Image 1: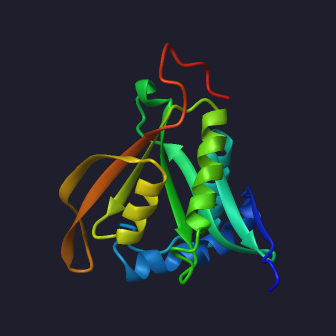
Image 2: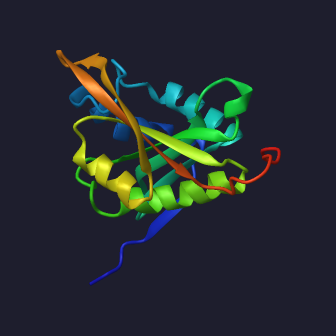
Image 3: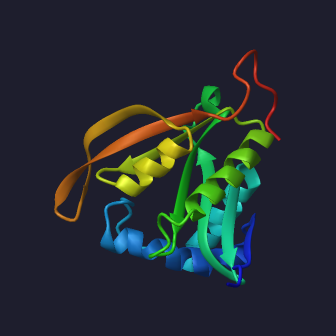
Length: 177
C-alpha cells in the first residue's frame, strides 16, 4: 500500500479557488455556514490574505491538491478580546472523519499559540455530530448554545460555542506577533 503525500502549509491567495470550491457545498447544501451564497474565489482570496496577516490560514494538501483548510480570525472587535480568536475547519466532501480536521486544527492551534493568542472559540450549527466530536476530541469545552440563532433552509438553527485555551493564562498577555 502506498502512503498518500500529505502536507499542511500556509495558505496563499492562489489557494482561493480550491478553498472556495471546498466551502461552496457547506453554503448551498447545509446550515453549517449561514452565508447565503458561496463566495467567489476573489472574495476567498481577500479572506485568506486578511487571516494570514493577523491570525493564520492553513491548507491540507494530498498529492498536491488542496483538500481542506482551517483558519483563525478575530473573535470580537474590542481590544480586550485581542488574544482570543475564532477558528473554523472545512474539508472536501467525503473527507470528514478521516483525520484531516484534526491535523489541520493541531497545526492551526500551534500557529495561533505561537503568535500569542490565548483562547480559541468555535461555533457549530446544530445538529453536527462530526464537528461536535472533532472539537471534543481536540479538547474544546462547551461554552454555551444560542437557541434559534440562525434561519436557513426554511428553519431555525441553534449554534453551540466551544472554547479552548491554547496559551498560558497567567499574567498579562504579551504583544501579538
